[in-house]
Image (cartoon, one colour):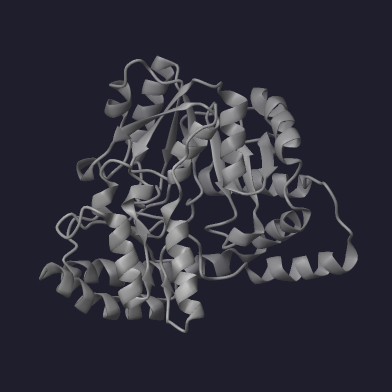
Length: 378
């Protein structure tokens, strides 16, 4: 029996945005969570050199895995072996790999609602059952230990994300520890999506491995390293699960792109360049948070990290998809409807990505002020 998956509505918004741009319209793309900056300079230089010198082929870079292990020690103080990394074509295949190699069809996997659309749909595609836990503004739209402890019967697994998509909120260290305690007591396996690590504005994100070495970690070069189109990610798995995960990866995906692996290793030589991107995001975040009350958007989860604003538009609509389409057609600003992230309450929310340039943020605010003012008068 085929799984029934909901579409990713932000993709439809983006297609409309590109169609309008082809007509000569000025479009500001705030619908997707991808950096507007390109890959760091050393990564691009390395890619040029490799293209000129190597034919390439199926390959998993041992030096890259060693550098990733070093990175975890430097950034988190966590010791992992290079052999625990399985390189993938981005975080999405890493999630598929974690779920398919660790769980079975019919297993129940908990997650926060709102949450990244692909969690729910990937689980359905693998014939697992998503157990969505409503998480409101009072808990920063984040999963808590108490909420997970209340799920009956206990789920087989849980997906956590800190910072999260669509809200950018963090799970504090003490709450992470409490979640780990609940999971150990109830036999719940943890998958931690850490793709937005490195993009923090209030405090550094903590890897789940600092509290639970048996967790699986999904991450990639797409966000912090500004290499979304290079399709390079990793699954970090417990030592006893490495052989099984590698067997699944080899059969399902072969290897990550060879060129991207070369470039990814070189990207570690550009940490200063990458940190400068965060300065841009921080300023964009400041501008948007200051402007939101003027737009009448007062129910917001102030993003601790990532590059998203998730705001309630309940006073204006109960159809966030139609609202986003109208906003795009009237102002040229592409955004993501909340229904992508929350099939129940998302009709009252909108998500803006501020991973664009600061001048684009300023222009978006200029366009939106009169438009939102007009909506509130209807």
